[in-house]
Image 1 (cartoon, rainbow over the protein chains, first blue to last red):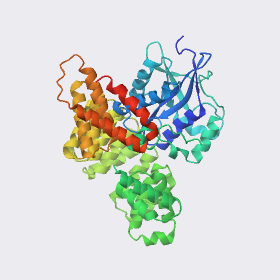
Image 2 (cartoon, one colour; image 1 turned 90 degrees about the vertical axis):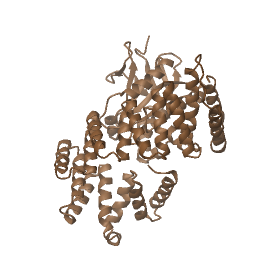
Image 3 (cartoon, each protein chain N blue to C red; image 1 turned 180 degrees about the vertical axis):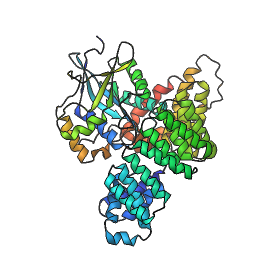
Length: 204
Length: 302
């Protein structure tokens, strides 16, 4: 069984962290790493945490390699693996999963074959304030048998859900208070290492 | 591009103004001078001055500069009515101004009226073929519509004439990187290094691109440019220090079994590691063990 019917369940804090990161850098593409593990029953991948990576030069390797090294060191000792990748495009109406995202996804897939790639869905994000939708404002991509990243349709199946059903409500709340200012990504860390890419106090 | 101290100064002022401590005009001037993009703050504080008759008249002729600044910030924040009002005020005051014409073009862009914006800019360029800002706006219109290859074409043509425009070279490089066209990005950084050889950020970006392209020669060159970045920044640039470690490790992996033509000083690697560890010890001690084991896993292959 490949990623055929696998569900992806993303913890509220991981989810919100990624969206806030995108909101902090509205005029740039941003990306992040998903951390987690298989569920006990093996029917889902649990995304337990996320690390926001960069808001510039996403297509360059050196900083990515450093960040992956440090992330693996840290989360490995906590029993988690890198289970996926998050990407937000620079432009509002760019709904394509670009080459950079696919390549990074491929790299993660090599180590975790059920890896997911999540792409920020700007239209859904904009519609969030209508308050009705509980599904994540992201599109889910998984690798199909021909080694391509394919969009998993969100009609009907709930293959990507937030663990806590109220995640969008909390997200909206943070958005209105401008919480994104507090998100630290790897770029910020490399500029000033006293800033912690683990964002330990973000939700306190 | 701003230095850290300039950014700190700007942030201090911004916090001060946000908390009602005054200094709004000083803040707005600094934003203009540093050419940073903080549209929500500029809109908020700029508008506050413009809507206050006393504050506004105290500005004298600077009032129009502020109007322009607020118009652009408003467009960035999609407050199109505010932008329209500011532009109309400026148009009334400067009826024949090309500078106001540019703003009108930008408003068309902000409204998503791409064809109209493109037409306005083309007309402009017929009368003023050397208007750099308009040339670049055309590239921006192409990019905003997702016609990246057109944007690249426009920028390249622009740079044929205006080859000293560093911002344009940097924008072109970044577009190339986002499309994974690394060799072309490298060319842009080479131009930038040629014209501003003491700017460490260009050395750093060039090194990053060379590393990304890969291959032994590029890795060795990348290491040299990380080293020159370290030189130009007095050893303070962490990305360059990491870069040296990555290069050494990658070069080591590629040269396994070959004749190690090692004019490479191993001191550079160990100095970089020492500098990083010292930095982390001082400013992020809880991350030091993580750093040490990560660096160790890099050194294993050299």
